[in-house]
Length: 262
Image 1 (cartoon, rainbow, N blue to C red):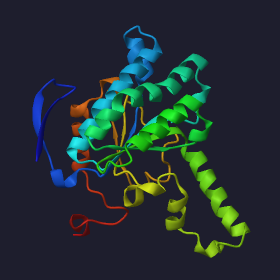
Image 2 (cartoon, helix red, strand yellow; image 1 turned 90 degrees about the vertical axis):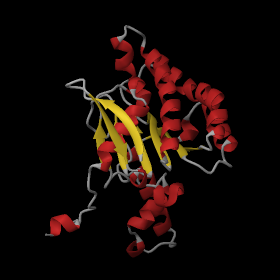
Image 3 (cartoon, rainbow, N blue to C red; image 1 turned 180 degrees about the vertical axis):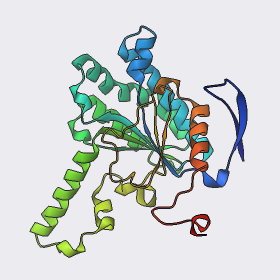
């Protein structure tokens, strides 16, 4: 059992909780929201929030690995984020360079392997190189996978998958009758994660309660936890609290548990 303390946001009371080591979600996905709002509340430029958010990624990645999480997928940059002001987009494109430039030694020390999903060929050359180098430098790590969704969009991913399937049908390599969920799984950007491709737990920070085009296929049976903290304020305790909430739920996948059958 893992013990941790959390404070009730309403009463301010501190309580001790126990995490069940046998029920740690194997794959956690996080929509890292609220960097800009965090900065604005402090009368800082939005990029200050993104910088602090990068430090939070380091903290949460190590905490998740320590808890026994197998895959941590982080929504780093969406296909829609290009609509933001050029200065902000340019800064966001530099973040992977700074992040991997300083954090890869820690990742290796913690046996964490980097993966990236998304349309990375559309990223600036320096960003692409930083990503490729991080993947190569951590390829021998056998612990948690730190999976970044970078220039990623759930709808675009599904369109690309359908295009690949259509090409196989058109070329005669595939009978339409053979198309099923397993085959579509193999066409998605999470295919390389194998049995861990679907998140058990999806966390979104900053109080928003929507998916924002993130892993639309993969989260069909994920448990959702929405937290009030802006991403720069999210820490190990917040992660443990979200996992604790996950552990209080009963996942039925559309079926019934023995309790509900009575």
